[in-house]
Each structure stands twice: as C-alpha cells, then as structure tokens.
Image (cartoon, rainbow, N blue to C red; front, side):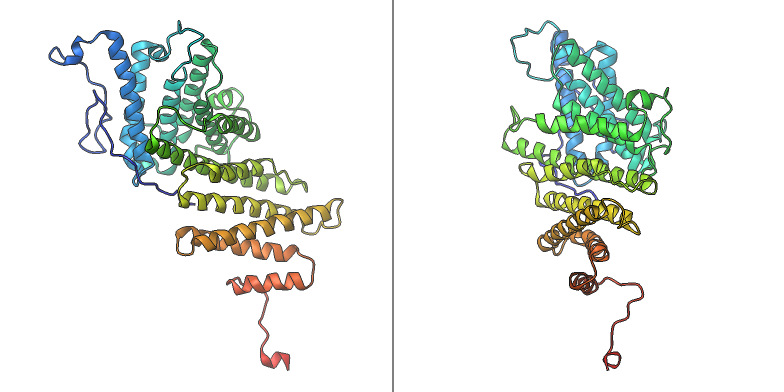
Length: 422
C-alpha cells in the first residue's frame, strides 16, 4: 500500500548556525564555529550549549516537515545533518542531556522536556535512515551501510541510552521515546522475516547485537514492540503543551500517519507469521492481528486526521478482518467436523461480513480515489471467501452472484443460456 503524502504546513527554515546545502547531494549541514567577529563568540559556553540544542531540535523539525511533505526523499540530507549534530554533541559533551535536563534539577520542579529528548531525536533519525535504506538503498551515500538492520541497531542503542537518561533522574517512561523504540522493534521483527529485505530472514543468534537489543525471536520482538507502542498511545498527552493551533494540527497529522504506517507493518508481520504456522496447527492465533486492528482503529481517533488518512485507517481495519477470516477459513478446509470447527466457521463468517461492510464504506466515501482502487481486489476476495464457507443455500448463492456482479470470476462456472434452460 502506498503511503499517503501530506502537504508540509510550513516552509523549511535553516536553523541558526547551520550551513545551507546547494543541492541534496551536498554534504550534510553542520554547526558552524563562532568566529571572533561573530556575536556568538562573546556568548558564554552554557548559552552556546543551549543554542546548539535548540538548533538541533529545529533541524529535526525541518527534517520531519520534509519527510511528511510531498517529496519525502528531500528529508535525507536533513536527516544526515541531524545524525551529524547528534554525534557532535555526544563527542563534545559526553552527556548532552544535561544541557536541558541538569542532574541537580530540583525534584519538586516539573521538567519542561523529557530527559530522554535528545536520544529520542537520535533514535528517530536512525529510524528514518532505516526507512530510506529499506525502501531504496540507491539513495545512500558512499560509506553508509546498505543493510537496513545497521540503522535499526543504532536506533535501538539510542533508545537504551534515552532510558538510562530517564533512570538517572528517576523519571517515568517517556511516551515519545517508547513510540520510536516500539517502531524500531517492529522493524527488527520485520528484518527477521521473509516479508522484508532488511538483511536476512534468519532468527538472530543469541550473541548478536540484534538479539541483545531486540529479542531472540520474532514473536518476542513483536510483543516487546507493541508493549512500548501501546504505552505511547495511552500516555501521549491529549493536548500538546506550548504549541499553537497549526503546530498541534501538524503534530497530530504526523502522529496519525505514524500509527497508520506502524499498523500496516504489524499486519504484514501477523500475516507472515500466520502463513509460517498455518500448516502446522489448526488453531488460529489472533494476537498480532488484534495488535494491528487496534492501531488502525486508533488512527481514526486522532484529532485533525486528514480524510485520506482516515480512509486508509478504515481500509486497514477491513484488511485485518479479511486476513483473520481468510486464515480461519483456510484452516477449516476439510476439517469442519473437528472439535470447535463450527464455532471457528461462525467466527470466520462474522469477521468476513464485517470486513465487507467496511470495504463498502471505503468504496462509498472514496469513489474516485486511489484508495478505492486498492480496496477493490480485497473486496472481491472477502466476497468469495465468505461465499465459500457459507452453508449451501440461498445466502451462499446470493453471495456468489454478488461476487460475479462485482467482476469476480468463478473457476468452472458457466453462465446458463436460454437454450440450457429449455
């Protein structure tokens, strides 16, 4: 499924102290050093540290604006710039978090930023690099790892460093760190399946970096990822502080799209895991499908969600229901008389009927859009799968007729002619 593109809501700004690139292929921007004639040369070191931190945040916002804009690829040099600045701050200060979250911070004073904020940015930038490497490795520069897994490992390391920063200050988990941590774990799970070209489909060895950072197997990694994502979902503030109306709308739109993309990834993983286990067990495990379903539903509950994102959220819900119904139907082939078979059959029928209703909603609201085109083959699949498992009779015949009326083709079916009737 193609990712919807939302227009950027503000022009890119060049943060103070950053060099502008003449073209995307130029080296990533880096912070300038104050010259004797530069007003910044007279600033005290603490002020410069704070400016460096504010510049990094602004550069990161610019990167996100570009990534969620009409040309996501334009974000790549900015993301490289974020990584460069993060590495520079780590090298210069050892612990950059003390710039905005001093260790001697009074306990009765509410912090304005999570202590992990720096590492959330660092991990997010590594995750964006993972996205670029995963979707088109040709955009990578010489010397940058081609294997997406390398960027995930760096993202997971940054997440652990962020958690340490919180622990030192005895602060609770930060929802934004948990979100990028969870997404990175989902990426790690993808890298171990045949559904992605992330560097192999073998489980990580016990002593590998990925195993140490993520987990020993796909189900474990996926569960850990969803635990962190659901924490982020339940702890994200309903109203974001210090943001005006436009900024709040932009943040909510980004968040909705993040949930959508994550749900799509989880659904792909759930289907892959089910295919691997389907031949060896008659029992259907809906756990990971339910994860995806909850995320798609959450997309629809985010304020300021554009209609195109909402439509894809509804389409995603329908896809989950179809995937679950089809998986159960496949297990029922030739096994209807087994213990619990009738219950499974009724469950599959209900799932598929609900999926069809949601597909119809998508079709009705998006008659002339690409989303409608994407939903058509899935709608047909839901119709014929339901028809196949319905008891013989009028309802089954009606469903087959509807499938044919929508353009579906039944193997071995020949339409009756007037001569045949006579």
